[in-house]
Image (cartoon, rainbow, N blue to C red; front, side, top):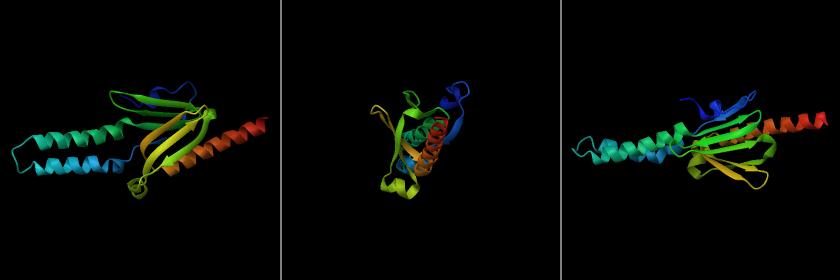
Length: 153
């Protein structure tokens, strides 16, 4: 099973930059999942192992099934394993990119990228590693496109 983004590129479309979910954004799932699994080592109960394993699996699903990329034509985001949520916005329709970070997000450098498009669309993509860097690179690319359009006019 390949990447959703790579499988859905149009002809002559190329990925400029990809972002991924930070494992540190899943800290609480991993922490409590690991704690439950470790606590079950001395007991004969399987319930803590099942609950802990589920929490760890949820964290892994968040990290492994969320994709975000800027291509030479669009910003594409996808999340979800069974239930899929996708966002595709042409680069000329992007108004702004915002970053929302919690205190933990600021400490561990992850946050939500909020893509705002023309027409009022507002699409947050959570748990992205190094969101400020991603936003800066997208803004630089969009500025280059604007400069090219101005020169062509």
